[in-house]
Amino acid sequence: MRERDFELIKRVSEGDQSAFKELYDETYKKVYFYLFRLFKEKSLVEDVIVETYTEVWINAKNFRGKAGLLTWIIGISRNIAMNKLKKLQSHESIDNFPDIPDKITSSETELNGNRELIQKAMMNLSLKHREVLDLVFFQEMTYKEVSLILKIPVNTVKTRVFYAKEELKKIISRMGVRKDEI
Image (cartoon, rainbow, N blue to C red; front, side, top):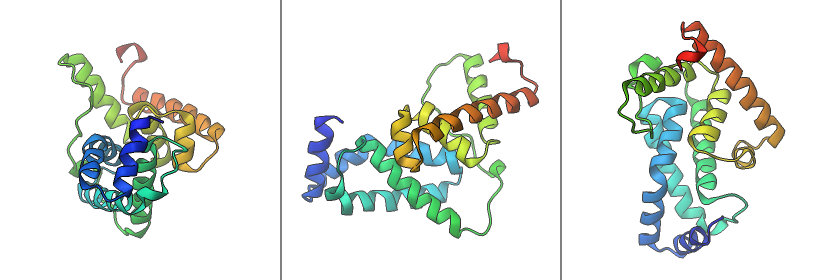
């Protein structure tokens, strides 16, 4: 845990609005893309973002540093999102939403095509598999951090990653793509 993160969250807990803005600016994109890659529903993501940062503001004094600050915030956003999903009765088709931008900025056509292919394939994974891959590979979190967010043992995280990768390979294969083309 970075010392700067402790100082920042301490200032937030004391009501420092400029510290809160700084925290928001540093973490917003990662939290947003984490939620969007999981749910692909912009209105849900925006609602969850507002509630997440409201909770961060209110509960900053409760941050203990067991995990990184971003891990804590993503954990809050995940809990809010999962509670909202439970309340939703209907789901829109994923086809109604545009592809999200990825953090990779390469201009190579082949890389862009592979990225789109992987994003489409990931949307065919179950939510729990899509989520664990997102946290490990896109958010670059450790298995321990993922275990804290998902509230599951580290070995369960490892198992989910293994099965998620296996399922992703099968989906990509069914899409007619050979392993050496990726």
